[in-house]
Length: 445
Ligand code: AMP
Image (cartoon, rainbow, N blue to C red; front, side, top):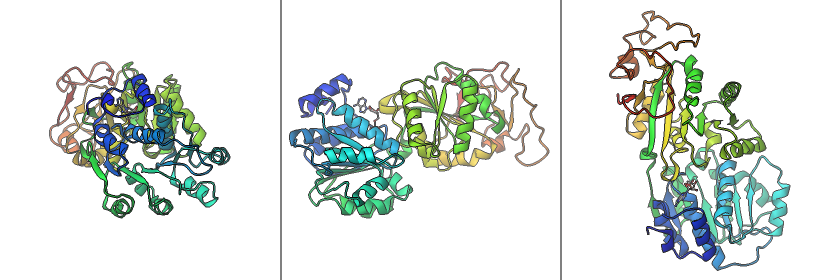
């Protein structure tokens, strides 16, 4: 299928796709939609950014439209289970967008907010329920939700669910599903611990695998920037002074760090907000909307909070800190370059983060090119001084192995010492580091 017109969608969906300018299905959509329209089960190995939400939302909406009936109180017809509140919210929005012409009733059931508005809507009857496992189980326990009227069940980001300890909750939810149903299972990776759930849930599923994790985001241009820890802020500011960095997510390893970076950027006049687990659901939502609507240009996020962020046109992902887990690198950079768009991912790496970088490169099976065309490039462990930055001079090497100082580059960075774009001489003027270099600013080690 090379066009959405080839699918047998009801007219309101066709019109919405036209309005949304969706003409060509993504690979997962092309492969999944024909089977899902027929009611088949599906095992999908795909991550966000592949167009997976539309791959399941469009056929689900179409099937609902063809068998329309009045919603029944507390008994949804479709349940989509997601690991995080943000992802649940976004899936709900996708259903609202794709189903605009169909006017189904839907509700999001997530924790961190009052349950009263959720139960009110459920009591009036909904067609589509998007939920996170904890709150769903709470409401099932109170009799506010019953799953025996389900036609379709979708489990999204199953591997994340596993990481977050939701497997026992999911097993309880699956036990409450009706025998006759359509089930869809999506996961970016398929760890063996998920196999029993797959077998229990799916019947003769079609199997689809798109963009395996290790090769994801190949369209994202990736660079690493060696920088001393104390220069990271200045480098970040330098990058963000480039107007081509139109919408950036900055990743911090800690919540506290995220707040500090956001405060620093805000004070520097760069509109910034942060999103992490210590913020209330309302504050997280505000931060996401502000970022999506373009009111804030930079969103500083931690790994957990960023899961499932689906915002188009993120020009840059900046890894201020390297992630603890190499897999998170792939999740992070997947925030840009969505649905075939191009994106740039810049990773700051200080001396202590070298082994984490090696772990990532091993996982993605490639070396990330080094950008040296910035004023804070750390050559041999000592960063080059940026004029007018008032920074302390490069520290001497006190003879310690791997300590800052010339000549350690090969040992510290592996292989050849990193070079500046101008042939190894220190940069004279700070350069804007956000845009991709036209030539010579990036090199493979
Ligand atoms: P997802 O993988 O579901 O998170 O989708 C990633 C992004 O791609 C979302 O912002 C969608 O709006 C967009 N998208 C999905 N399918 C298409 C398509 N066929 N054409 C253009 N954009 C799409």
